[in-house]
Length: 131
Image 1 (cartoon, rainbow, N blue to C red):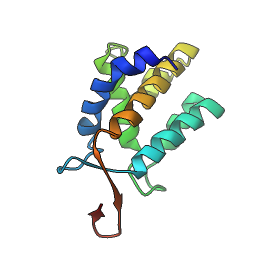
Image 2: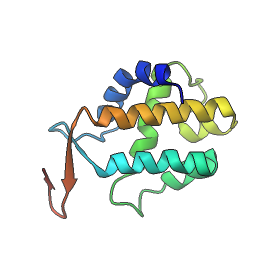
Image 3: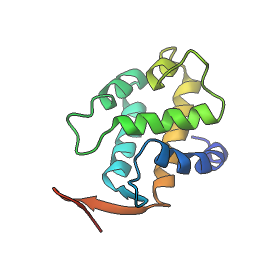
Image 4: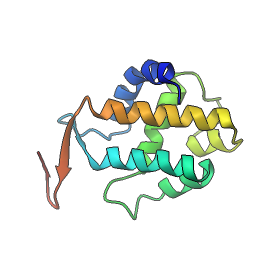
């Protein structure tokens, strides 16, 4: 991970939280998303990039929609000029897996996690979001 890259991506990551609809209309973020971003980073580091993306592409087995995390990371990379025109999602970008792409995705995920701290974090209950 590169601290200067993460620092540079933080403002874009802040916008990505809104763009991927991780933050609700009140500007609140379910803190479960922070844990999911951490899990994604650990999965990439311990395993492999493409299987991690594939696992997080299935939102049915999670309390939050993990696909929003992938969308936010893709948004960050796109805004920073890393995405080519033919790459429509994070899987397309990572298909030609390389150490450079892996690091770029991990940097973006770290910036995303830090950006979530700038929002009001909440815990979700069954029927509503509470503080």
